[in-house]
Length: 256
Picture 1 (cartoon, rainbow, N blue to C red):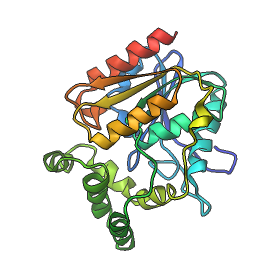
Picture 2: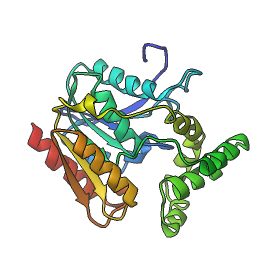
Picture 3: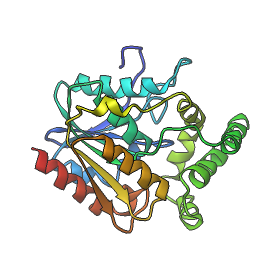
């Protein structure tokens, strides 16, 4: 339970030092289900449902992007010890900014943190249309096609994926999350003395704008490295779980 009364749900499993997993947009803790078993052998895994996702409490009327950072930092502090923090997509951004708000982050793994910016007006108009029509499928397809820039053949496969219902259930959170990007600006100076070891992961088949964003984050962080996931896109935790876990374990083990 957070200070504002919002319940944050999570799945806890495994034994060892705490490892907190932060999902991206239109997802929840289930996005990690193929990698959690291998991580549980070495860590106590906390797979969160971010506010308004999965089984967590809803966005409040005064929702802002800053609230996401505070939620995560507050959750980490309740654990009472330094954690390893892993974030995917927008969840990678939230993990990074949360780490500025708590002294309880040992090191981070950030998988393709995107630029936190409002989509172009035409895309935002379509997002708003599907929101007004209460059409989660339209929201999902617009997001994956026009924002994530998923190849058509991959988008078709996603609609047959076992996580399809998870994405559709969480899709109504997307408009609020995207609109929260409107006034947010990243200040690189905030990270000038940021010393937590940070691994940035990038799939070789992901869109180039994500590569540019990943490089920008890496250049901002004094103690970071970038590892390429060859042959993978934006969802390696599902398409190549052994590769994904191997890179994380190799990095985090080196930090102990």
